[in-house]
Image (cartoon, rainbow, N blue to C red):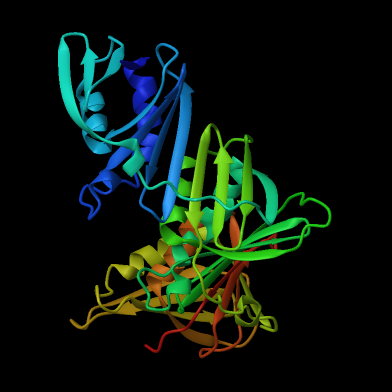
Length: 370
């Protein structure tokens, strides 16, 4: 039975969309497979890791048959990558095997029944629905994802808090040492209640991979334990992280009086130079702020030192504060503005980094003792 007839590139692009979450080794063998559902000319490809499910579709089918099966996702993708440009690719279901043919190349792959594929059960009703452009959602997540925790025992930190409120969508991430907040304006349907959900780390990284910078729409739908993102013939459904996210409003400083304005690129390059003499285990640098000048100081166990001075816009008392240089580099690499503001209280209080001309992004970083 003919399943698919398509150009190699078109089929490979569709398969690449869904195959990234597929693990090569699974306790459940069918999780290493992609589900192929054919309904006449429409073919849908679906993958899952049980926590998340990604699907995409295209007009690649042959004949009017309605059929479904599963086949090894990575094997099929590796085959498509290895094929030369030119001949179209045909997939045919023959009993319990799928044959792949392109030009003079032939492959035969084992299948598993579609009935064994564990589809994510969607809720009967979505509580919140909001629309953004792909570019805006990608920007929102890219501004905060560096602050997500990795495999933290406080599981609610291993992801991004998504806050949907009247006219605004915000994203927040923290690993306990730093916190990133970003917001964008949008239209929310009248009468819709605000919603706070924690999107898992793996889902955030997958969205960043799949989204582009375009103005094409993204539909975001939230339920009590699931989120669905639909865009560009792609549908991503993810379970949400249960738990209470920290009160980020309390973490963001509000009364810091000392404001340093500096060119982002100038500060980034200074930190990069100083970080050369930090150790892998101890990534601390000191930032000594005084009238018009910031001195970045680093040292290591070999008694080597770096001193780097840059010009800043600041008038006030001298402040000597230490930071993990990686945390500062992460935020400066992420921001694309010409200048940034660094708001300080003293050498023992957390610092707030913002754009020089906007309030839509805030980055809090805890000081280090050096």
